[in-house]
Image (cartoon, rainbow, N blue to C red):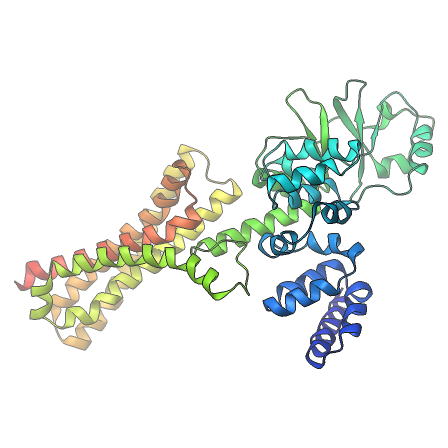
Length: 452
């Protein structure tokens, strides 16, 4: 694996060198025969817009579909918007159903309808079965390309049936067993098929306790099931238990990666599909919204400081020490916020009892760290300003803010989740506002009591 990565990096380096020297024929050969589609997609996403467009034009038509499915939605959408319906039909002809569905969901409805009309009836029916479900559900994630068998036939018949196929669908670890009504009843593992007596029937060898996934299940819940049960593939069924398709581990890996990207980018108020090389105006417009929201929260914190302007005028040391109180609360709260959001993503936080335990634990941790760092900061303040009263004030403010930060870090994502708001997107902004306001108010409020 390490040698493969080194070879891929060497080829990518040679492409970049060839682009700089104008060797387009060499680049074209490497793109179409020297690199895997996923590596070509990575190269395109890693290039500025002008180079990106040139690379896409050098890819052979028969390879475009394979590359396209590995690009993020924003980049692939740029290329798709310039294609005709006929070109899209040719591009998607060799792709899996779920990958075609992803592509059609990125283009205007009138274009996708034209693409569907250009397909043969069997492919169209299979694709419409996937498009009937939202993109972020098991139904939207599934592939309808399955190999099914009946329970009453022998394994010898199954093997002869399989030999009639030119190839099996990728990630085929089980054959799906259905009855005459297309109801799912079990799986026949490939490894059992190969080592069992060929005179046995499928019913005698199959497993009936296979993990099934309902078509309406959220994709993140699907990923949790795959992780928990170490699945390679899983059948997808409807309300009546009828087989609709299957989900494979490669699709689940994409879900896990997208979820991780979403959590990371949302912390900064960005979209997980944010293009690294998007135009300046487009990028600036997206960021401006969250900068505006942050400005509003900053005004709130400033308004709290403004309430104690006379106190600050009396004692300049307060202005020097204020950032310490706010910063300590912000860090403490962010630690809890990140932990709780992760717990929600993993499904660990799902009942009143464990929420109560979590809140009590964070209260204890906040109080412990408050006492610890209040002593350290109070001592440092005493040495710095030689003022016992100021040392006690900042120590008390630190304890108050760290306790509030711990409770807020746990409560904010729980409340947002209940209100169907993404905690990763809004949690950080709300938490920062709380810790700043509480930190400034407690520190300056106590100072006003003792110094005025």
